[in-house]
Amino acid sequence: MKITLIHGEDIIRSRERFGTIISAIKKRGWEVSRTPLNSGESLAGFVRTGFLFASESLFVIDDIKKIKKKDLDWLHKNHAAFDVNLLIYANGEASRAFIGGLPKNSRIESFDLPRELFLFLESLFPGNSANALKLFHSLLKENSAAFIFTMMARQFRDMYWVSKDSNSIGYPAWRIAKLKSQVAKFKPGQIEKTLEDFSEIDIKNKTSNFLLEDLLDLVILTELE
Image (cartoon, rainbow, N blue to C red; front, side, top):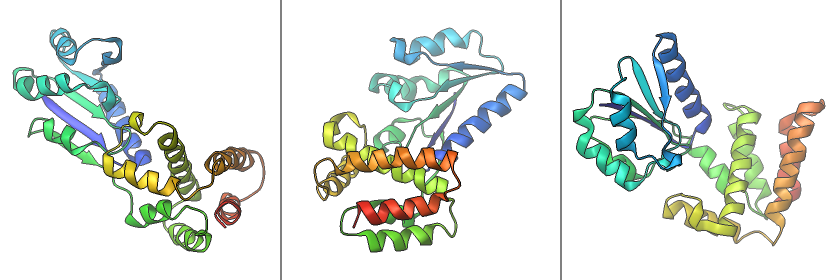
């Protein structure tokens, strides 16, 4: 079995790569089969059934969360018995445990974010607007405002999620701890207010002549002062 895992914090580039592979496979005339693991079917059952029709086909798992530990264990033990292609996508960084559970000959494609972007996202808390603005404008030199906005929105979404139910977010413990530390610096309701601001910014960016970087400047100044 030829296994490819696409993962990483740069979800924009990783998703593009995922789509590029599928498009290239379809252009060859191959069949793309998405695994219905969320319907209760096991990976073993899907592969065994699909193996009968596996000539010139690609099996796709578009959400790593669909793969249970028993599926990963089965994959590790039985991958050599099936001459099929399996593409796995993670909407974020796959855990070390998951990567370690894959067969050793699996192809791992990682899409990491610049360290400066992590520093910027972690700088988004009240009382730190000057530092956040400095990092924001530094990032603009090599990244689009739209990309930075997407990552800001995801960071605040994650902070809100962790504040409500950290057990369900599915991130490694170290990342959850960092998010909780960041959440603790906000007043009650402030994260929700910023998410509302982001929704308004998204609308203005699409329907007016405002520059996105100016709108983000304003929200950093007002919400993180």
